[in-house]
Image (cartoon, rainbow, N blue to C red):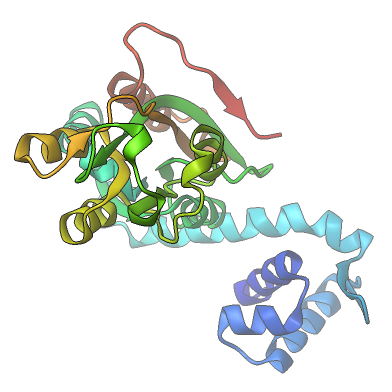
Amino acid sequence: MQIELIQTFLDLSETRSFNRTADRMSITQSTVSGRIRTLEKSLGQRLFLRSRSGTELTTEGLRFAPHARALVHAWTEARHAVSESGDVMTMRIGIQHDLVAIHFNELIGDFRMALPDMSFRFEADYSAQMSSDLLTGMEDFAILFTPRYHPDLHFETIGEIAYLMVSTESDRLSDVQPQTYIMPHYSDAMPPLHAALHPRLAASGLSIGQNAAMVALLGTLGGTAYVLRQSADELIRAGSCRLVADAPPIPQPVFAGLHVRNRHRSAHRRMVQILRARFGPSGAPLARRRVG
């Protein structure tokens, strides 16, 4: 069976639109339709029902979906296995953009020391894409802010980081101007938390989702924003910003993500332990989450 048929089925299961799936996969709508017909013929079952209200999975389609996800994941792992050079296995790790600036060199050293027979490929990305890549097998492990809950994925809390408010204009929260304030959007959970803390600043017309971009904007435009604690310390030492001392820090939980098939593998468990040591409070057990 062609893996493209399974991939098209899974994308259509998500979009429920032949047009949108065609756009996302860069193929024609007729190709999407043809692939689905071929898959249905191979299975001897109808997988989708089309009507004016949209496209819906049949009962057989719903039953087939978890097997389709497993097939795509297994196929990706198989391609990865046969492409390995020699006996060296590669661990493909996605990491949230903002976390590259925190403990990154130490993490690489810890991983290599704990798993000397493993090679590592890191890629900075955002949570949604990393969750998708874990599902398909394009990544083996992810360090992220916002888990995308799914029956085939497992997430564990490994710690927490903090963002602090700094300003080129004032060190008092009451003097912060909405017109020069830059909203933080480093994760999906941050906007509602920020709105509860600072309703007066909700009128800001600019929002940024990456710490490095926020620091750069403060340097060129000035104003007030939340940045990583490490960045705040650097900006304050450089004299370019002041800490807004009466603004509460905004916490951001950090998660490890992996496919449920890898949940109990020794290499993955060792990496989770290393991450907890780097991001978690010393000696304090952190909650684990299983997506079910």
